[in-house]
Image (tube, rainbow, N blue to C red; front, side):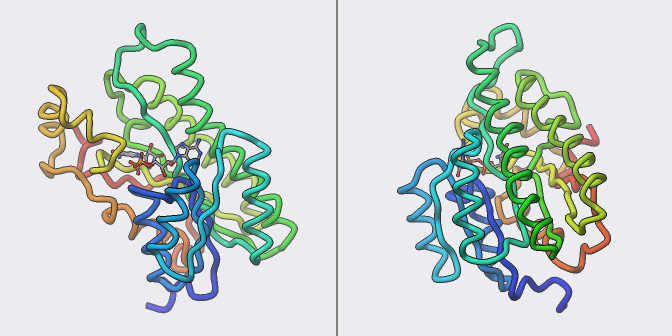
Length: 249
Ligand SMILES: NC(=O)c1ccc[n+]([C@@H]2O[C@H](COP(=O)([O-])OP(=O)(O)OC[C@H]3O[C@@H](n4cnc5c(N)ncnc54)[C@H](O)[C@@H]3O)[C@@H](O)[C@H]2O)c1
């Protein structure tokens, strides 16, 4: 369907060097877009961009650092107007009860997952407003932002915060044609969770998924293409849950 095409559009995907971000970047390119992927590890992001071909470039960026985010926005917009932004960069560096989390660990998760999405959204949206072409911002949150998951307190709080940020930005930016939505995945088989699923907790976490399996990164990408495309032109402030039924438990 033509409405789902991203022909002529440009997207920026943070955390695009691997996992869900890489799968979304690949799907965007298949749908016709040009894509800028950004991640903290410059060598990894350059390698990922090369693997995606000529319509992709890779840029180094730390989404928690305002100067780095501004440089990303400058460099991405220097290539042409950016129509689609995916705030996918995220960390989940530990799996432990709240009383065991250090202040430094708390700050790092908030810095990347919440402050990062906020900084990138604002830097890109300001430029979208000036260009007057509207845009689509997609925040990759988590089902942990909806269902309370033990040992994921700070991570879950950042993702619940991202849901509310999505809705407020959608409300504030609708009049300028910038749509803001979130995708809340359940467990996805990526580097982020491989240690966790190899640990003693893995079996129980898997048993809680009604569909009985983890998602693959590609399972998340279709919804991102839809939200980025004109097929979703009346969709803003929504949270699309892709979790194999996990939130129903
Ligand atoms: N894997 C899951 O089960 C799962 C479930 C729900 C939501 N998510 C969310 O999906 C997103 C992607 O997760 P993934 O599983 O693909 O993880 P991943 O660890 O495979 O990839 C994370 C990406 O984010 C980048 N990144 C991390 N910190 C960054 C920073 N400060 N600046 C720029 N880039 C940074 C990494 O370089 C990498 O490219 C995250 O927001 C995560 O919270 C993942």
